[in-house]
Image (cartoon, rainbow, N blue to C red; front, top):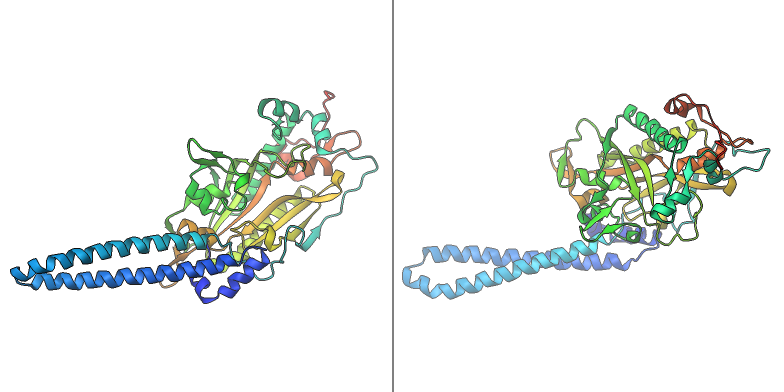
Length: 423
C-alpha cells in the first residue's frame, strides 16, 4: 500500500497518480476521511484509558467505604474503554481497507494513459527478413515434433500444450541459460511454491483489478500463482531484513498458471497465450533509494538474454493505466514476431517501490536503526513464450531452425533443429 504519511501530507500527488492511471480519485478522499476517523477514535480510546488509569489510582488510595461507592464508576469507565477500543479497531480496519484500495504512486516520467499510451525507450536489432514465406511458431514447432497442442487440448482443454523432444529441451535450455546468468549476477536460485495463501496473494497486489486472471482453489482457500514473484514477495513477509551487505536477490523457477480471462479470440493459436507455462523470475529486496538503479540492472539482464538469443526487440515504458496496482514503473521488452509483423511482449520488469513491502510488513533497519519498508522489484529472465520468437526469427526455408550460439551449450552443442517429417 502507499505511505499513509504521504497520503496525509500530499494528497494532491496521490490524486495525480490516480488520474495518470485513469483510476478513481475518490479513493483518496475516502482514505483521508477514514484516516481522520481512525486518528480520532484512537485519541478517544487513549483519553478514556488514561482516565481509567487515573481513576484506578484514586480507587487504590480510597478508604474501604469509599471504594464501595466507586465500584459503579469503575465498571462504567471499563465499559467505555472497551467500547472505545473496539471503535478504534474498527476504524483501523476501515482505514486499512481504504488505503489498500489505492494503487502505487507512479514515478516521475511514467506516461499517462492506457494500454496504447506507452513511450518507446529504444529499439534494438534489425527486423529479420526472409526470401521465403515465413512459417509461424506452431507450424515450425509441429514440424520439429516439438509442440503438441492437439493432445494438450485432449488432456487439459484449450490453451494447454505438450512440449516434447526438442521443444522440452528448448524450454529447459532457455531456463538454464537464464539461471546461469542469474547466478553470475548474485541471485540465489529458488524453487518456489505455486500455491499461496490469500494474504500473500493480496499482499503482492494481485487480488485487485486482475483477480479474474488467477486460479483459486476454493476448498483449500489457496491460489495458483501466475509468477513466482508472489511466493518470493511472501518469503520475507513479517520480517526485518539485514540489507547492510547489499540487496537480497532471488531467482525463482516455477510453473505458472493464468486463466487468461477476457482474452478469448486473442493469440489462441500456439503457445503465446496459454494457461500454464514455466518462468524464471528475478526478485530484489533493496533499500528504497537504490530501487530505480536496480530496475535498470534487471532490465539490462533481460536485454542481455534477448541480444544473445539473436532477437530483435524494443523496450517500452508502460503507461500508468496499464500498470498493475503494485508497480510504480514497468518496462516491457517486446520481441519482433515475423508472422505477426509486430512486437509482442516477451518479458517485463517492475519497480514496486515500498508498496508490496508495506502490505506484507517487510522492513529493514535504515541509518539510525529505525525500521522502514524495503523496496521490491521483479523481472522475468526466461519463460516459455520466448520459444515463439526464437523459432520464428531463426527459421530457414527448409523448415529447420538455427540455434542461437549462446543457447547451443544448453542443447548439447546442437546448432540446427531439423524437421522430423512426422507432420
